Length: 267
Image 1: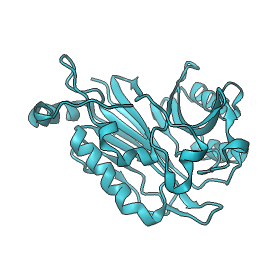
Image 2 (image 1 turned 45 degrees about the horizontal axis):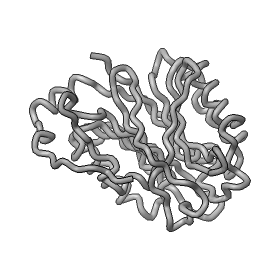
Image 3 (image 1 turned 90 degrees about the vertical axis):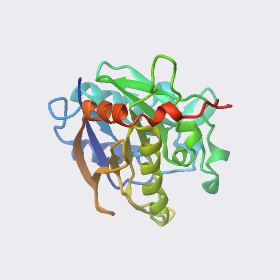
Image 4 (image 1 turned 180 degrees about the vertical axis):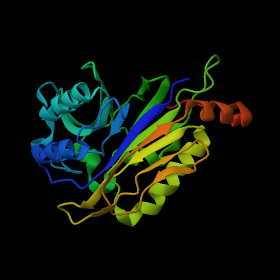
């Protein structure tokens, strides 16, 4: 079984300045590539910060310089690079998580749950599809920030042949410091209830609206125990290996999925 080397990138962001953020991230990543990692995870709206100025800042999908940058980074580094971007597509704006592969192909997930307390639901369209991608034999469910509060959307839907839909839940965020305890608690809860690894990457610093971000980027195992849990308020880049055999052994030893309730998600 293959393991999955994952790099969490926690950083401050320049407000509404995609060029500066891409330049900063490229310098931060240095020569990191396929020799060291399989997956690089950037925060939510890493090019702009959590902007509600969608009319001016959302980039057309087909001509997006930030999406092109993600593709270039994935190709040159030989690993997957992912993070969310404000995107305009077919007349609507989306908080879109881009999954860029080394071969130049991409998959995307549009944030389903929009943060109404900031008016996100008035400035962006909601996604209507759960998206699961594969990397080195791991299946990853993609999500963005506020999605984390809605367990039904993220709940495993075991099939008759496959006991698990996914092995890793990935959540990128701009989660403010005053709500850091819910962030940490919800990451652990999603890991425990889904018997899956959870990757949560948040930002640090302060945005143009005066909101502070504590970071608290974490990687938790299938028991909700932190593998990576960095001190708050610090930028960092950390690579860790997700071990497939440990996951399989625990799922066999503790088959809580056998007692799960059947349900359907109504979109």
